[in-house]
Image (tube, rainbow, N blue to C red; front, side, top):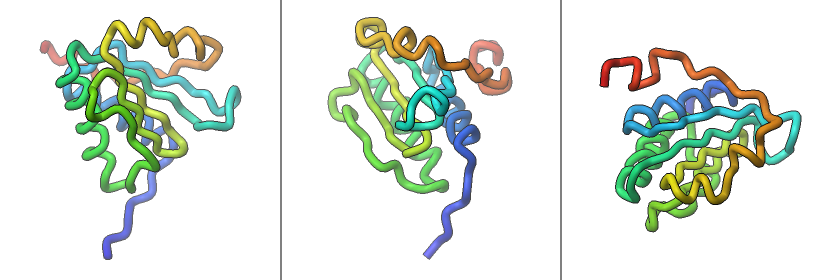
Length: 128
């Protein structure tokens, strides 16, 4: 039986962003919500342009983080409109664009501090 590697909540959130960006997710944001809510330490929000891209982004995050343990739950994968992956300490949301604006989690959590995503992860800065 393999032992899962330990990872901090912040590192898990950054990995979510990195794996989402690997699949060309856009408007990726990491919000530190620990002081505002007990549901998680970080909220990672991303957008995709189609249901297939939303599914690919979610699958990239799920498989990329597999070595650090399984998520507690995954919802919405079959539809690909809004996928939520719950890691306990990190909630990862990937939306198709119109649903992201409709549900406005960014606005709902506007009091949460924004965590800077290292430039090396941003596909826009890689000349893509």
